[in-house]
Length: 70
Image (cartoon, rainbow, N blue to C red; front, side, top):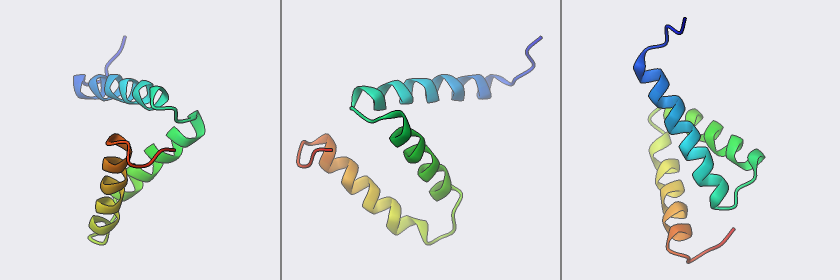
């Protein structure tokens, strides 16, 4: 019998969807693992993480707008 809360199941589905989306963008499985690990590390970090997150968001914006490619 599964006893996971609904929130955990939704997060797993979201993670799978996110993983598929990153694969479609051309990221390798190793790169996806690194990205997800970095996000987790920065989300659990201290107050100094905001500057790094801004840089990552800026890079994401450049990639999404086709200004840089991987």
